[in-house]
Image (cartoon, rainbow, N blue to C red; front, side):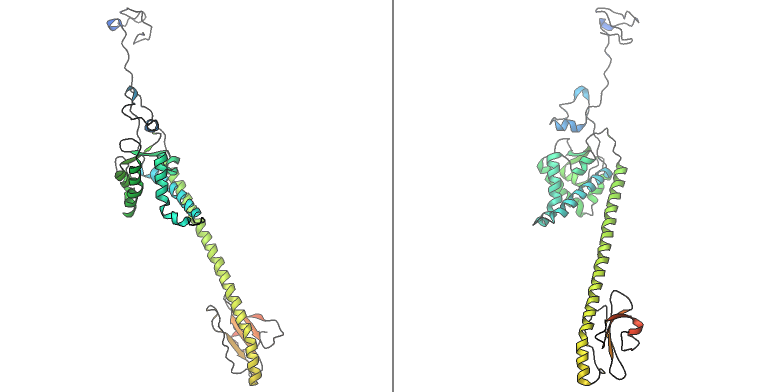
Amino acid sequence: MNCQKCGEPIVEGASFCAKCGTPVSGGQPEQPTQPVQAGPGLYDWLEKGQAVASQNPAGAIPDVKYAGFWVRWAALMIDGIVIALVSVALNFVPMGSILVPVLPFAYFVFMVSNHQDTLGKRALGLIVISENFEKLTLGRILTREVLGKIISSIIFNLGYLIAAFTSRKQALHDYIGKSVVIHKDPTKENKVWIIVVAIFAGLLAIVVFFGLHRSITLVSLNSARMKANDASVKSSVTSAVPAIISYGKANGSFKGYKANLVLPECSGKPIVNVSADGKNFAIFGRLCSEEGRYFCVDDKVDVEYGYVSEEQAKSGKPSCK
């Protein structure tokens, strides 16, 4: 035994410390009171399948730190990204699209029942347990993850929001499933604001990427559509040449010819110019891809057809030159 004051070993049966003279009550040194130390994290108890009350050495109480709204939101965003990626992959699998609607429920039920967390919660050091600090039963998990989250969602997600205002940071589906979300290691500090900013930045990058991709795709599709319309204009205008030549031979003049052409809506009606003596003609079709540009054919069939300006097409001149 040691002296309570100076720590000097006490001779058995002595009433005083030989070094400092401190009396020893009843011939035995008084033992200092042991301070109560914080026990291991609650998750460590649960992993061993032990009840908190029956495994509480030296009066130690396991620390409990409830997960707040923002860290839970960040975990949910991570889970949302995981689910979205799997959903996209399922669309490439035969009959996989029929699984997409039930994928979120299946994901959460499987992860919580087998691991007490999800990939998002695991990344942020969170776990889901019962209000009594025990592992959730499958029935409670189904109630929480299916019924509870449907109710939390259909009321404009207010069921999720109330986690910011309740004493144990419980959302509506936590109350329904009699569960709480806690930090796996209560002593570890999560830089939640960094995680939230990173998720927002990631989501913004995804939105910008898909927005740009969509814009580029739309521009490409529009360009392809305009080129297809131009090809239709050229084909229709060119196909009119044999008909107008036949008309001229039959009537001795090109005068009075009406071009019965079907052009794309973006092109409008064709323009037919015939010379005063009726011996020459030119047909113009407006291009869709270039403002003020026309494709032209005339009676000089041995000459390559060309493109002219709007001014020439509307000048009345019966020639592509």
